[in-house]
Amino acid sequence: MYLLTAIIFVSIIICLCLYIKKRNSYWKDLGVPYAEPTLLFGNLLSLLQIKSSAFWFRNLYESTNHLFYGFFFTLNTPALLIRDPELIKQMFVKNSDFFAHRLGGQNCNHDKMGVNSMFFMKSPTWKIVRKALVPFFSPYKLANLSTIVFKTGDNLVAYIESEMTTKPSIDVPMMASMYTSDIIGTGLFGLSAESLTHKNTRYYVLSEMLAKESLATLIERFCFGVFPRVAQFLKMRFFDKTSTQILKRILVNTMEQRKSSTYVRGDFLDLLNSVERRHGEILKHDELVAQAFQMHFAAHTSTNTIILALHEICLHPHVQARLRQEITQVLSKHEVLSLRVLYDMVYLDMVVSETLRKHPIAPILERVCTKSYTIPDTNIVIKKGLPCFVSVYGLHHNSEFFPNPEKFDPERFSPENRPNIVSGSYLPFGIGPRNCIATRLGLLTVKVALMKIIHNFEIELGATEDREIGYDPLCLFIGPNKNSSIMKFKPVRRG
Image (cartoon, rainbow, N blue to C red; front, side):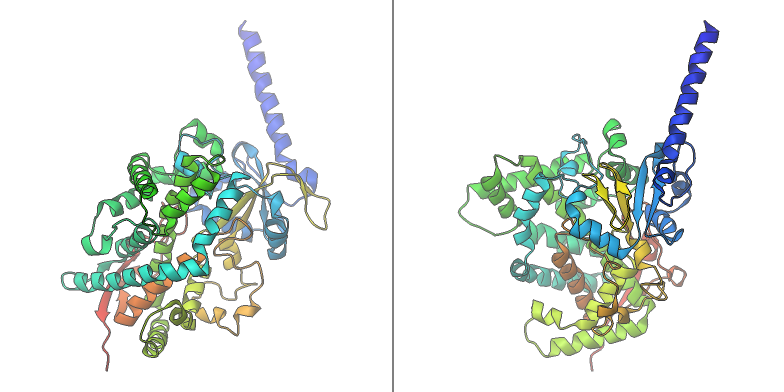
């Protein structure tokens, strides 16, 4: 009996090893260059030794010069890294219908706000929702939203002035987070956010809970986005359960009140009600409310960009001086601040673009092959279900595309130099049909914050030992280390 059990056990182990060995030869059999995997953990074992997935993918990107490169997930699931900008455009733009889905969220219905957000939503539902929401982020709508953004910028200045009277330095992450939360809460949802004027409002606390970063949330969100089966089995969530329940109740109640009112704000919640009227038979209520949650979470990417830009400006006094000079000159020519005035600030755009180049908030792009695809000019077939990745961080730090990539140099994006950037090598907001829908609003949010701060204050780092920018290892995307984001503000002296 024991002998039979031992034989069966050994046979299972042998079969498992043979299966894994066969899986390990997946890319070799196809003639695709690949990273040599370990037996059970594929190529991901080294991820535990690296601070973030952004750097892990960058290392993989830099380990080869091939146009594409095979690697393996845990349990040796094959995946493909796309390195060549032209191939990235070919696959994710021209042939985007072959890569219509993202990997994450599949069947994770225990987190309805996460799985139904547009980021993880699958087609054809995704196409319906995307098409319905695009008008809200149009240039025309942005002009209407800009009034609220400019007003929030004034509140930001008042907040800094108030903090300066009692504190030698300011917690920039908290300041930037309150600023972006106010824009989303007031501009998109018509709520009385008022974080900058009243501090720790209920809305701000809920927003922070929703985007809270810890080792536990990092693991849950990473699995939700990359290993959905694990997330489904362990009931891992993308959004915090408690804050989700409270915020969902607030948003749903507000939407219901709007339905019985004749007053139309024309904001994001009104748009969701309009979409529900037009597509109620196709779209579930949770699929609409989830888009509001995505907007809340996306606001924190703008928060991080503001912090990183301010840190770079502190490290480069000549950039700060030139930026302040441009802002002052442009504002002196206009009595009223508008989008056109903001667009005239060319150097401001260069500074923001370079910040997003050096510190891409979304350092990794991924798509899942939805139907068999032959890589152009090869006989290599990407099978349905295989995940394909792009290391945005790797592209942005490739000296072939951006010489001396570790240097913060806004001149890369001057009107003269910008046309020379290789198409497909600069992807701060993604690429193809599934790029960031709120790009214009995100840029407006960041630019107004920087414009208001630099025009009114001289800034410097609060501690010399924190001069170099460090990333928060617990942040799913690229986020600054909280310990290196304390800054001193001094009023600008005007002659």
